[in-house]
Image (cartoon, rainbow, N blue to C red):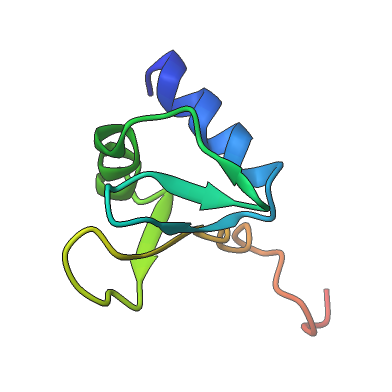
Length: 80
């Protein structure tokens, strides 16, 4: 992961972990514009770290951080 990708994930996690793309492909989260290009978000999606959902057309849609799966052997609700 590049420094920009790491910084983008950190920024999104500090801004409610969810954002919306405007018509120009700029991510808006928690009332602020992300200081990262759309290509950074696309690369993070390709790495499986964020997901795009509810696409509504060109340049529109939302992005959110993908929750980490539970560690092997650490399943909630199971007896040890």
